[in-house]
Length: 267
Image 1 (spheres, rainbow, N blue to C red):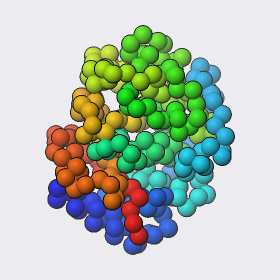
Image 2: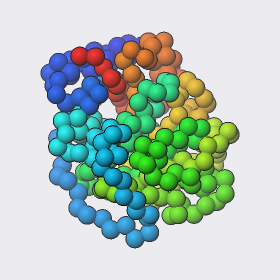
Image 3: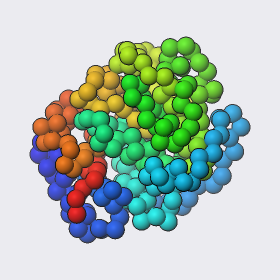
Image 4: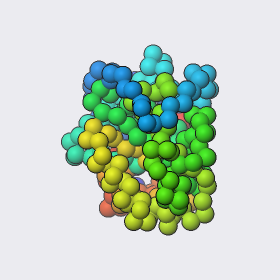
């Protein structure tokens, strides 16, 4: 629990120093670093491209799509902090989760992935691994009927399931697909472990972000955690209790928690 208290204290100090850089008053316990230039264009020849209206991105608070927004700055700070840590450790896979549902993990994962994809040195793949309550496709307004579940259950070709949401450059999404009951077993299966390795190794410049289910509501996150290099925790001020935060950290002991995000923090 001491680590959580330290993270929350650093978050409050960051808000006091930089009150204009919080998109829902986001804060993180990581050190700030400088971001490189924006990436060049990529032509998607095999991945399905779906245009997402700017109004949809704005209404669903996908602020990384609007670089001039002050809210996007917080995700740029979070992005560069995390990328530095990942580079230092040679990490390429990151999971985003929270203690409970509704604390902002999916929106954080999507905004972070989109912000990471703006970097010049790599592309980003966002995988919706919340097979019980998929959320990424809904936020983007794209067809998410087919996705990860179809790959694991029906051997659907991966290239038929990937989606590039235009105009989020350098970002590709693997939706969760249909909701399934035996999600923990699927995420803990050899097929899933092999998929993570394939996604990690197929392109050297790729970073893979996984939107995981909440830790305290099902066994899914704990079953999948050994497959990733690092985990980012999302807490919501006024909603995530100290007991739930502490229990989440305890359950993830032995895994690399790269940092915390305090969502909807009061000024």
